Image 1 (spheres, rainbow, N blue to C red):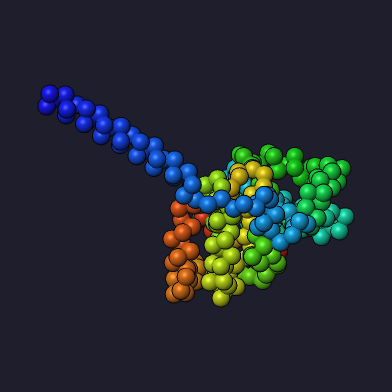
Image 2: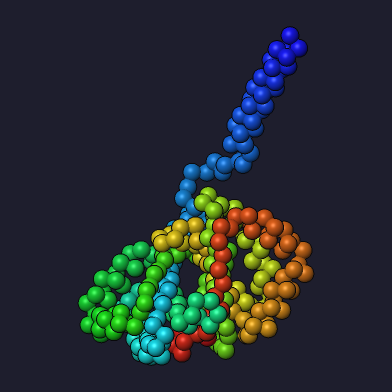
Length: 266
């Protein structure tokens, strides 16, 4: 009878633990409050519905072709940037110094969004010089990829700047569903990172790798980068931003880049 009683008690305890686990799991579904607004994240995070569209390109170049590739870009890309026939602007063009080696990064802005992008792509297909550039470029590349981006409303719009500067592109792969949370924290955090005019632009992906954020920074050199980043920790509230945003990140990457001669961002 004692053994039977112990077995019954054990089963009761097991059932109770099982119910507790079920209750705990069920309650966990409601721990995080969901924003009741029914709107696309892009509408909540950008300046307005007609925000600029950006394209970022990553070209991995054959090491022996890098100089020829840079020269080809410097001969071709400014002509598109300066031609009002194309509703686009070259924001910046760089070679990666630290990070992926033998890599070029280009960023374009399309004022007017997707219609401007479509117009530019259609016109460039009729441009014989550009098509020849693409053919020659293809012989020099190992791989390439791109993303279409929108800009955060609370960041600066990238504008040309004088050099010499180095640029850091910090890329964050966020956990799905956390973009609004990231934006809420960084809307406050960007104020801590404006003191040396280092903030160039902040973007989030629309096509390509999704839930991807890119922050672009400018520094005089690596020593200035270290001093500026260390100074941010002296501002009350910066540590809180870091504490709450790090768990939102799945993966992060940093590139130190050197502007090409044709880059408006020097």
